[in-house]
Amino acid sequence: MSELLTPSQTVGPFLSLGLTWLEGHLVVPQGTPGAIRISGVLTDGAGAPVVDGLVETWQADADGRFDHPDDPRGATGSGFRGFGRCATDGEGRFEILTVKPGAIGDGQAPHIDVTVLARGLLDRVVTRIYFPDEAAANAADPLLASLPPERAATLVAQEAGPDELRFDIRLKGVGETVFLSV
Image 1: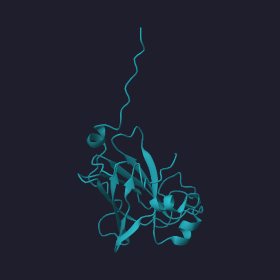
Image 2 (image 1 turned 180 degrees about the horizontal axis):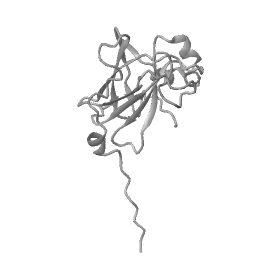
Image 3 (image 1 turned 90 degrees about the vertical axis):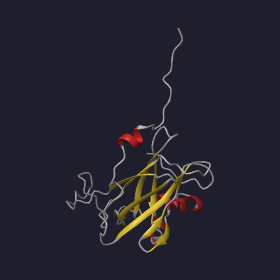
Image 4 (image 1 turned 45 degrees about the horizontal axis):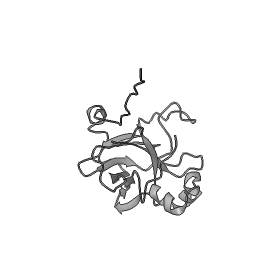
């Protein structure tokens, strides 16, 4: 008797059925003072847009604190959820409305953690968004400092206008975004 293996699967249709969240892209409400819009395109190894992906973000508030009991300084009680989720559209685009996080006080530059789920991925991939106006903090950040400059550049958003940043995510190939082992 031969042993049958269960076939591998990717994220599959549950992504669009169970994980979409209409207001998930609003980490802060429209009109919040200091709000920034971060948008980009999720692409595959061939450079084609990933039209059925999901981009999630997790971050500290503007003071570098988390409203979570696991924050070593204690939960802020501010109500800032720090979590966002946006499905990609028919052109692979996503956007998040948030505030720039403050430094969390451990030598890391201000950043936003990003999780990507998409077809063809057996598990999520994780990366970060760093800010272009934090040159000194970025230069001292342990993660960015450990990477060759051209690879570190894939983690730094680009200015796209007043209160707007562009952060494209390339899953594979030339210009691939740096992904972290978690």
